[in-house]
Length: 471
Image (cartoon, rainbow, N blue to C red):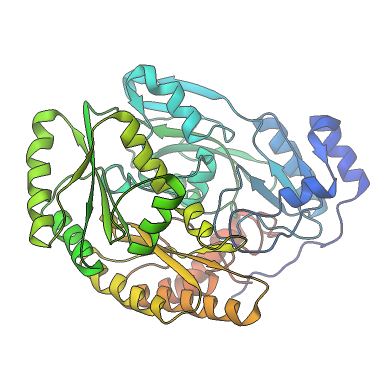
């Protein structure tokens, strides 16, 4: 079974642009090339492919009306948040319309006593946490970039805190979604915000991770968490990659409730020292953070310290002050830019695989050895507490031989993960680059079921076509 391109692939007409303008106003429609190009790329290595038009709706009803026009004219739609994706999920093409959701930027419903909040797609995670801070609450899913929360739901993002708080999939309670024909649905029922439900199919988790291929998320009801009484952060370096990753495996197998446990190899530590002004040994390193009360954290710290020492880890270097903690985690979040700075003018590609914890040491060590045989610069980082790691590659896309070598390397990394019952993506999504690996991971029959779901919700293949599922 295959999904075919059945939209007309004709340029968006002046009549359609006029129709969009009648809905959102002339100031909220653009066909200027500079604007279109800005909305035809994300942070990935995939080349910019611009849409024909960019439209800024200001509410859900306008999104619905725009979708109805696109549906009638068979114009594909691509939702756009902050453009921080890493798998080419917003690349467009002729006849496509970019629906820029940044002007839907309201926190529409907040229940601090119930630990939940409802946000529109223009709300980013930092904006939400600024809003929540005085309430003693936070939204801890932290992919690094200040991404749109609805965009994070669309890719099932996670990040540094996932080892304790889970991913977007565990923290989204309800979604308002505009379907391809303009129909508006609420995946758990309008206004519903219970912590659990057994009512019908789980449409919320069907949309989470669908990357805009099934509908446009216009609201997300999110689960909140209390700001911990105490947080402690530390850095520990090791002689070898294996000893550092062995420590992670042992910590997780002992059931220590880590808030964050991040791995950076020696090359990345060198990059972070230079880019972020750190002064840590250029060696395989763990960044750690503990959340809880002072009494509960103490035995956790002692146990992790013992395990690190058993693996020849250095004494913890503590980030005692909030300023020091922020500097440490800002450096980790800026690892992408630090890696690129090792080769000025380069483009970046970030792999994203996840493996069972017990397989993590051997897979990372093999990947590190693989990197040593390559001519390009590559650094390894990872949210290794849940088995998720990345190789950040800095390369020259204009060099065909180097590009070929980079693609072959990333294919080997992904194949290595799949060989040990892992996944081709832990958090970045499938986008354009991993569609063939999705088939290898879940099988033809399962992908055929996905195609049936896609066809049922989007029979004309108008919602972000070409992403996730191979044609």
